[in-house]
Image 1: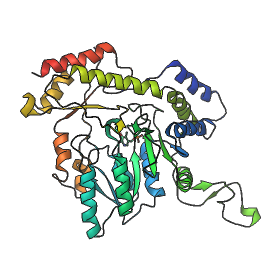
Image 2: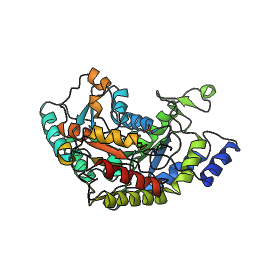
Image 3: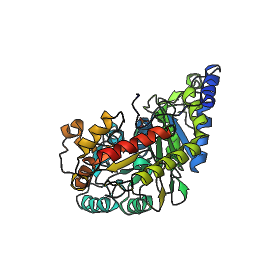
Image 4: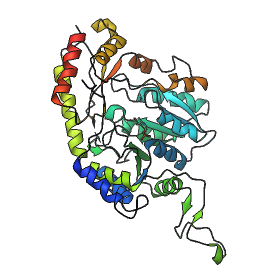
Length: 388
Ligand SMILES: *Cc1c(COP(=O)(O)O)cnc(C)c1O
């Protein structure tokens, strides 16, 4: 039997039709689908501006650049995230550091952040930007992080790669009420997909303009940005800064726009599958995902924790049994600073103890809208069998 993956895309005929329509049109890139997709995401979030890119990694990179991150600056993020959250800062020549996680939410710990900021202030090494990652789709405590930002003068990027469709204090994730920029990923395992792709939303026009310029080589054709030159030297565009080609294609944007119409349906399905896991795994000696009262998760991931002292089996043993049964489990994530690359730039084990404890116990169960009832039941049955 086929292996059940931990996540996968859900593409219907309407999505396919939308992509085919672009393929038959005049513009495969730089056409009208990208702005339409951008508007759709901005509108969903209630954010003023939206810049689509070829990945969330690119969007994180340009977020950092737009906020002025460069050599000599510090950028902090959570120890438990995908490597792209911190790589983005390294691309800018900045130094990165990691903050330990909250033992309940597994998001960045506000207490650890506050403590670390207090120490950093004394030695003059305060971060320029903090990247708050909404792990599994559940928002961080943004209000508290925002207050620390005001006090210590750092900017805030929300890495909401997992969290489109989630809510925080009654507002959609991406409202940017407590941050400067929010970034979404549309990789196929995420909530909606464009194949590869990402969007940065913001309420700050200047940041949106900078990211728009940087995603397309630093080239502008806008009258108010063109540098004055003799008339015969002004063509229709100028490169005014060093940018990148981080553009999303219209093929991708058309898929994204079609998927946005299904966002509500996808998130409802994920929440209902998560609720079923909660129900059926309720009696097992494992830790199920904790849900904050302030945030409604989009449930990109359903992470359980297994503690040998409690259930008699280690994470590795249970992970192996699930794999053997054809269940595509995963671990999200290895603490970023334990990656060989990060160790090569000086990080050592023990830096964030709570993150390391989490890493030794976490297992991600399959969760995606197209997960069938029988596959969902299979995961539950196998877990019940391997756990006493
Ligand atoms: C997937 C992911 C990214 C990177 O997204 P891409 O679109 O693949 O570049 C960044 N941060 C987190 C937390 C992610 O899960």
